[in-house]
Length: 331
Ligand code: NDP
Ligand code: MG
Ligand code: MG
Image (cartoon, rainbow, N blue to C red; front, top):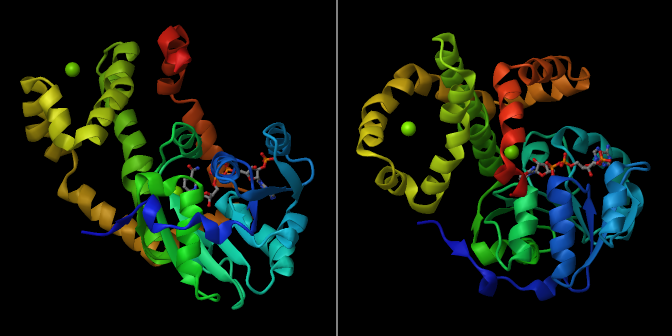
């Protein structure tokens, strides 16, 4: 079994004299900056002039600099910008300010693995990738816990890159939950596959298809919403707590029998063949090329698809229903 590393395996002291610039203050950025600061480390935030999140960073008690300035004063530069803007910001504001011995780091391997960012030889290049959204990285840290992380070394100029990456993972609370070593390639490919096939793409397509099937058969959209969307969380919570077995223990025998006999008819050999095709598109860089070009063209397809999805009836029914769930607002 792959080895997990915990608090005792990492030395925070390696970072105590370093200034860490967190570039970006969004989902991951705010969590990394605040957790590192609360771990006693010296943190500055780098953002563009007029950035909306700069106000939040200042309100949270952090020092905010323009990206170039933050990169210049820092020993460690963590890039937590949206993947599609990283290349330009790196080339214009970060690369000119990198010095020998600096550490350049990422929370996703996309730009380095696909050659959008090519770091110079004289810096360490590492990744610390929390396996959870930023608000959870922050919330669990506040509760004395952490979100598991992957870490990887792409370039080891100092000879210390691996220990440094582990120290950073400790600083954000990752080693409280356990961290796992990987490579930029493995993290990038599995992360893209997971979000496309299972977590985001697969799940939203499954939810929508189930909802559409019930509604076109004449059932009330509100019921279809409950069955195909709302209950997903209840089931997933059980799966995360105790695997498929715990979920199957908790559901009725009727549901369990339906699960075992009907589930495999939904994920067919065709579906598996499509999964392999999607994996191949990731491995060959075809997906990366498409995403990079889409962004360079000003996101025409992305924008149109976002708009169409927002108009889907499941979103309208959901909005009305959720506004009546007082208990949802409290959580
Ligand atoms: P967000 O979209 O949440 O972060 C956006 C931040 O970047 C904001 O502070 C935004 O400022 C700032 N920003 C946007 N454009 C620029 C620019 N041109 N120059 C300077 N600052 C800019 O990103 P995420 O946190 O989602 O993602 C960051 C990285 O973490 C990515 O590599 C992603 O793959 C990775 N990751 C993300 C996870 C997640 O849960 N979201 C999970 C694991 C990894 P403003 O508010 O002013 O627009
Ligand atoms: Mg991802
Ligand atoms: Mg039921």
